[in-house]
Image (cartoon, rainbow, N blue to C red):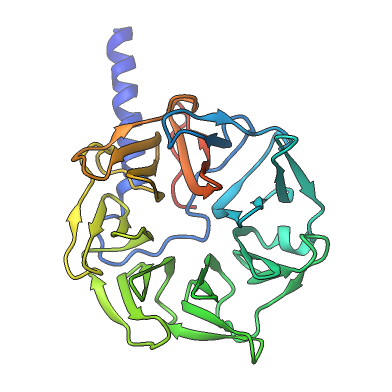
Length: 341
């Protein structure tokens, strides 16, 4: 009887988890909240480095507090700087000599606006928030100012630099920053187009949205739909291909989105990929239960989480001076998984 009861509870838990994770993936249009990311509760297991193209991972949480919540796009890299934005305690820089994170006292209004995306751009650091738009600092976080002129929506999902121009993905379209006028300008979108990811490839800019993917030659505003199979929560690229991340499958295109092929084989069934990066001839995918790795010519992905906590949802992945940097959290099946908030 005890065994039957335990099995009954286990089946119920699995059904609940599947309902939370996949309940909306069949729709062609999906609107998700500004914090489409699992919660991070402890510094242990939050930030890891790999020095061998994702084969092994090393805990790099030293200097972070016991509570760290990093939003999607919340890790920023430049040629010589690595930073993260915590929703709880603000901006942190990584000191490579001391192998430790150091906090910069961050504007209270920025933190209260629920920061997520972070980007180094020219001589500023930009932070996107859920409710306060975009903040920027020219003194590495000591003082911040808002940069929202021209924005019609203050929920910022991603920030990107493409061809020396700053872009912001919002809940009502894609914006670019006009340096001469010191204001944001709508590149593409409307009040219902939620832009979740930005990338560039072979002279064009690509956006992932709740209504599929769209592309335009850079600087021309000649947008066309290139992916109509459903909502996307992110899009990445390397020098060979584009990677479109649905909420239940990962796709690849070698021809700027004219044709797509699924490359989900080897990844967890029906679970979505948060990020894809390329290092040499190796692809790495940030997934709900760790990092997956495959040679660009291989058919299937294989788990490559040696050194990561078990069942660690990896939500951000960046390359910093040939080091793979990831952040995430340890998801515990006994309490279920958190997806969209």
